[in-house]
Image (cartoon, rainbow, N blue to C red; front, side):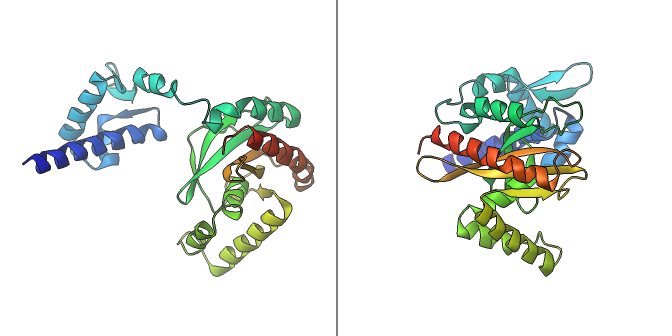
Amino acid sequence: MATEDSKLTVRAVERALDLLLCFTDDSDLSLTELSGRVGLHKSTVHRLLASLEGKGFVRRDPASERYRLGYRMWELSANLSQDDEPAVILLPEMERLRDLLGETVSLYVRDGLERIRVQAVQSSQAIRRVAPVGARLPLHVGASGKVLVAFGAAELRQELLASEVWSDAGQREAFERQLEETKRAGYATSLEERETGAAAVAAPIFNRAHRMVAALAVSGPINRLSADKMGEDAAFIMEAAKRMGKMLKP
């Protein structure tokens, strides 16, 4: 009986965490939307939300009956270790790079076959790319994705190339060539690969143990970030990435 009770408790925790993860892409959601996303009956979701609300992890708007993340999440995030968290440590250098190049600067880490934007400093230009922190993007498109794969483990490269993300063999072969060029040059570029009208250039950040921990990317509209301009900016980005790496513990 104790074992069965433990299983039920773990399942409830997993379901509650699944509900919290629904807010990765949306700031507020209804009971119906949450129920659909986690695949659970409304009554079950309602009970879980009541528990989360009681602990301050979500809050419900009485007028709209929609749910948002609660203030307890802010309390937890405030205690992220500033000694070990690259998104916190590297922010001043990212701001410095933004001021130098005038474009949006982002920091990406890998999670499986996706990349996550863990920090961003928005361009001050009137027309700019807005880079939401927490966004999940595929590894097989974009400058930062190429960097994370090219300088990552060989097993990651093999797994990605063997996955079902490719429309045809030609696309996969072109990506392999881009990876080799990225390793040779020390940086990667992309022109409208994921988003129409957008361009980006990225470089790897290695910590003091020479382990790659993130990709540093600068992005903007193609009318400002031409292929030539990205080539010029790459030197500044690689230099900034080198400085950032020296700030990170092994």
